[in-house]
Length: 258
Image (cartoon, rainbow, N blue to C red):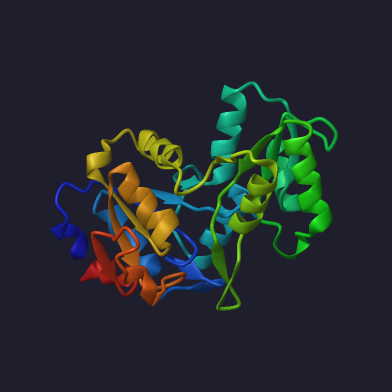
C-alpha cells in the first residue's frame, strides 16, 4: 500500500468532490480506500468547499454511496464561518447561499438591510446583476464584512469546467475595494481547524485532493504533504511550474492501495 511508504503519516485530509466522487458518480475504489485507511488506524477528516448543502446532507450523500463516515469527520466552510461569527460576536447577517444553507444559520438575524456581514456561497445559475449589486451596496455603502465560503475559480458540472463562486466574489472585491474573508480551502485556518480537531501534529498529516490551488497549494502553504489525484478538476496544465506542485501525483485515489 502506498500509504505505508509515506513516513510518519498518521492522519489524512481528503477532499470529497473529484476525489471520492465526481458529478454524483462514485470514483471506483474510493469506498475500499476509506475502509482500508481506517483499518490502518489513520485519522481521517474530509475537507470540502461545498456550500450548496448543510453537513448532514453531505453525510447522507456519502452514506448512500456506501462510505463509512461520521458527521464529525466532515469539515465545510459553513462550520468555519459559524466559528468566525461567534469569535467576532456577529449576530446580523445577509445570506447569498443555497436556500438549504439557511437552516445552518437559524440562530442569527438574517437581513438584507443592515447586516454586519454578507456571506457568499455558490448559488450557481441564480447569480445575476441584481444580486451582485445588492452585495456590492451592502459591502461598499453599508460597510458590511464580505465573507466568502470559498473562492474556487471553477468546478466540474456535467463533466465540463464551469464558473464557481470565486469569480463572483472577486467582482465584488474589485468594485468595493474591500477584501473578502475566506473560509474554505485554501485558507490556512480551515486546514488548521481540521488538524486541531484530530489533536495531531501537522507534520503527521497528508492532504489528498484534485484542485491544484484549493487542495494542493493550500496544503503546501500550510506546511503539510499533499497528493493530487488525476480525477475531478485535474488538468494537464496543473503539472506546469507556475503552480506549487504536490509531493506526489496519482491517477486516482485507488492508487493509494499500490
